[in-house]
Length: 442
Ligand SMILES: Cc1cc2nc3c(=O)[nH]c(=O)nc-3n(C[C@H](O)[C@H](O)[C@H](O)COP(=O)(O)OP(=O)(O)OC[C@H]3O[C@@H](n4cnc5c(N)ncnc54)[C@H](O)[C@@H]3O)c2cc1C
Image (cartoon, rainbow, N blue to C red; front, side, top):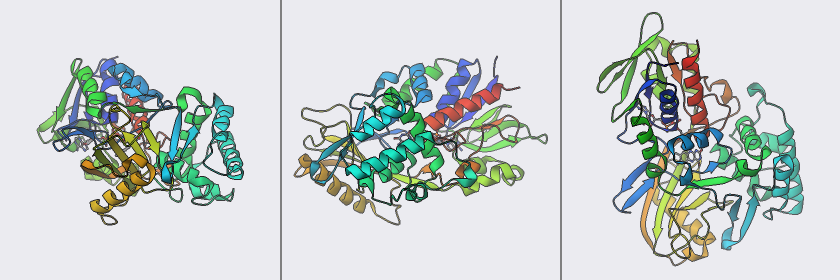
């Protein structure tokens, strides 16, 4: 069945997914992206200093990202992900001690527990407690959003506080939820743990893109779309939605004039949706609740050293300002001299200057990667994303919207929408596929 002409606003993962699934279904798509580049919060920029493409921040993909993987297959880009080394996470402690957390001890609950049992990053007593918590989590039924605890409240039932169990729970929560245990709601974390760990095996593996996003997925996606029935218009901003008296969408006002269509998928963040709506809809119960979303920042620091400093493709730094370190591109000789770090739920500009961030990051690298001590920094770039993801607190599921809206022909997608998942690429992709399904609903 043909979807006719559809306007997709936003060219991040959700927008590119929607456009792809729509052209496959026979629709003609106009994709509007206000920036000069596609990719949104997972985009690349050319850095003159480094002489290379850099991403706004390194991203990890989990084997359980089934929808994102299928999409990468469609674009012919799936081979751009490297899953070698992805069976375990190297936890790197001060002094360079490395302990591996096995993710693929086998299939299902037994595999998850077996993998965890081999972890040497905490005492045997803490390990047994952690295994018991994981087992209980995996056996838990659904949590109603009205009764959702924070992760910290849930852990306190087991006597686990911040920093306990070798910082394991703090690490897992900030990595998956981009929020500390005291703020993150348990519901999306539970869903992620179940999808990743309960299935086990390949679903629990971690993959990282070898090339910057532009080469990895943005160019392939854009070639796929423009070879079919999609027109991609970058540098064109949606300015407002045109809705008629019967609450039917009839078009979008843009920086380049009005485009008419009776089907629009918005993949912009919640505040962007509110800005685009006519006043009478913005004040309605369905949309007004979007004002309640809060956000959490992520900071990335890209560094080129004069020598290899990192032996692994990626590593996790427990109990540290810096959370992850990734090698950029392929290793040169004895490891990676080009690295990128990530700090989730990072301090805002008011809390810390770029100089502070750089100082803390370099201290972490020198403390945990012995080869970084004495290495000379050749290039350095800080990228701050203040609204990196929505902060999913207890009860947030009540304000995350479904794809269909009270405005006929208007659909929503984006990582912040009501997928039940943490705000990730997989959430963005699944929400967009849901929006496309709704377009074809009678
Ligand atoms: C540094 C960082 C690290 C992350 N790490 C991970 C990770 O490891 N794994 C993971 O799964 N996720 C990670 N995430 C989250 C992931 O990037 C997001 O979940 C995903 O990119 C969201 O895609 P989206 O399409 O929903 O939104 P966006 O990428 O925000 O796309 C929205 C698009 O709409 C455009 N737009 C907005 N307003 C308008 C308008 N009026 N007109 C036209 N266009 C408009 C924007 O420019 C943007 O391109 C990370 C995020 C950041 C910032």
